[in-house]
Length: 441
Image (cartoon, rainbow, N blue to C red):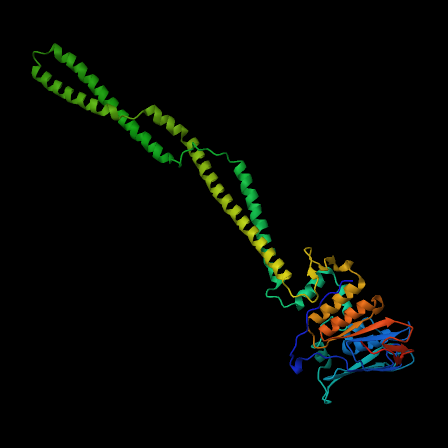
């Protein structure tokens, strides 16, 4: 058998915070009990006897006196048949707890009364609240831990461990990053699909050209050509005029000289203007092709915007993936370094618990019981009393390991054991203490 080691109990506790254990238990007419008085002397208190003699009633009396609300759910009729009242008194040293149950007049229900007194006899107000502050929900009933779902077992263990970070906060941050990445990845896919339908056109114009500007250039070119043609027509007229003047050269010599001068001047202007004239056909073709070129420019510009957006969201997705991985590693390290109640107890990758590498649900009953007891005591409740109702599942070595566990936590374990030899622990027969055959361990 593998013996797991518990976390050691704190030393040098202030007296006001010192663990409370049962100094004496007295019960009358509770379930099968007639009357019992038990003064335990060790860490492991064995209640033994044959079936049906009242062993479970002893452990339930202790449970019901201190934690009535949880016990009442499974013990609806705590008063022994034939009696009208039942009483359990638990002396915890600093406190004395007395609970009394009384049948109602019609005998169909019971009422309960609780009294908590200090060792000096001072009565406590809000008695159940006083008791509740001394224990966790696993005190007196560690088997509750084993009945939990795996996720609840993990949550309960995390609640009592002293971790530098709250794993729940890490989980919330991871969930937020995961949700953000999911949204960003939708944009990644959307933009990638857009890019697939937007062919790249490296030859597209770098920018759109205004149609108004193109029309203005065309108008300017038309004006220049009209002016040129007007000068051509004027030159033709002058040439015709020269012909007429030649026939009248004698009479019109003076006029001929003047016209030649004008003609020469005009030809000079024509020579100077011709190289700068625009290609009217080319400008007209450019205007017709303008919208197509602008459409290509717009498409290329939009594609560049989508490329930039796609790059940005891919980078955001990668950042979120890195954050999720970091959060996962932080939580993994946090849980791996947690001071567990037992050596070998660990958080499984799937969210459950393992003991010595085996899923807790698949461990032997004795191993699971030791885990439950260790977890119940790991929170260091002031009331260090544990009740084990299925002690018959434990062999001698397992009971010894349970006693070691109790000592390590300064706890007192009350365990029920089916035994007809009358040689083990506090022997119960017919609702009374027959003998204390063997010292409590």
